[in-house]
Image (cartoon, rainbow, N blue to C red; front, top):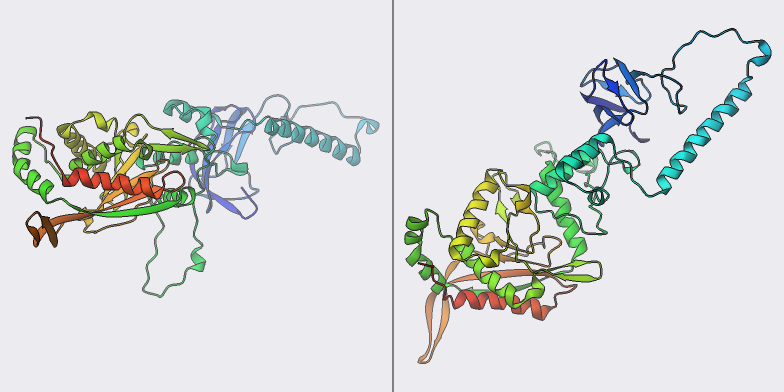
Length: 432
């Protein structure tokens, strides 16, 4: 369990007395202050005694379980050997202590050499339980090899795999790219945190831990740079006010600003296809499909990014319905795994929280994300052929973060400017 671990708690027995156990079968789940893991069997046999009950604490070195084995023990481990009646040995046949130690050392050397050979062939060990879960979830061996393990010698445990599946289905984390190693879960030394008697402390939830690591990984991966532009959306505002009631009556759905902004983003992505790309090592992958992710706030304050696949094939009605459907199911926790995967560009509406602008973090492995601020009524200079005058306009700030490794300032700036042009010169109509 590691040098610094002195004890573990039995959390769940996976086998019962009398069960037949195969090699590498998980027997019991245990938890320490550092990691939760499965204890797998090193022998084949029958479980005859559980030495501890669930929730009891086991010291390192204590006997956890007794397994009855048949035949000779293949490796020199602390297993129960069968007692057989044998004829008394002659004194000259009894090996000396030195001979016994030498024989045992030879057996240990053979086992260690076998282990070295198995490690040297480059194949990672997975317990039957982990393999079965991966098979049921459709995870190939190549993807398993990318998942960081927290077990002994970085072995992948059941808890590691379940946490990874939660990441794949509950957060905007993409399937690891070739050569990508997920960052380890960060830990905080509470003894190093000072606070007064009135301070309150709580552990980060698993979701918060995953999001934190995903955000830090993005900052370490991409060279973030931002461009900002102010957009006059007065015409767009007036257009929506004129059609939203008829839309809701006909479609039984609300027409929010989200699909309108997304429609402009999709058109701009067509004009600047390099913004709809990703990086794989030294290669740039220009995505054919425009799969637009929309950051959605959950009731607990966290965010999830459902993805509208092939969004460029949808008209305004289709976009509006897709946005409302995904947002509602995201908040109720009923999204399907594939609905949070394979995004190529992300949009986030920070204006719903009253923010004027922001610097969003890129959702890896994408190269850009656009944040929409709050729409405000402000005094503005209006230019006309007959002269300039001051008027009340509705304006919004677009904040565009992009990966400066491959997107230069000109492209990043022109892309967000093109989005602004589509919004200011809104000419779309509903298909009825």
